[in-house]
Image 1 (cartoon, helix red, strand yellow):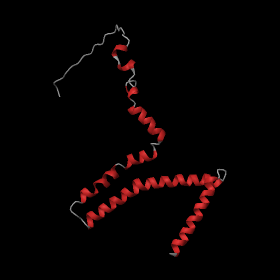
Image 2 (cartoon, one colour; image 1 turned 30 degrees about the vertical axis):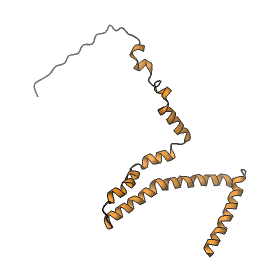
Image 3 (cartoon, helix red, strand yellow; image 1 turned 45 degrees about the horizontal axis):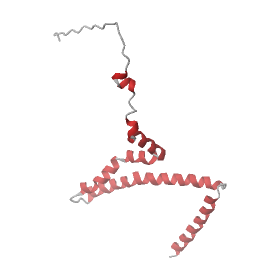
Image 4 (spheres, helix red, strand yellow; image 1 turned 135 degrees about the vertical axis):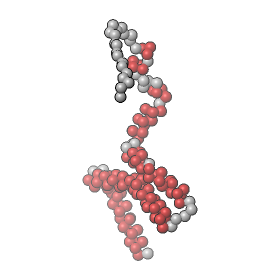
Length: 147
């Protein structure tokens, strides 16, 4: 109970200090607070994607070796799939921001622009200029039966 009360008091002090820092934009601690908050959020995202899947794989290996049960493989398939998709999840969390997501959505799923992507001069044979060539290409092809 004593530790709980001391922790609650400390949390209230930290809350008050955070209010002071975040409400006053001129406070130099505000910039540091926002930078630390951004780093913390990044670390939490990495922990969720990497840490939980790694812990799941460790639990899977330990239960397979020391406490095997009948449906072990089926139980840990989702953890294996999550582990395989780590790169994609990291890409989605750290690269695909709102602007990137909107640009990808517009590029991939905009029906009006799908047909404009093909350059007509290269892909449409009816819009190509007809050219006349006076050159003749001849080639000689010989097959030898000697190895």
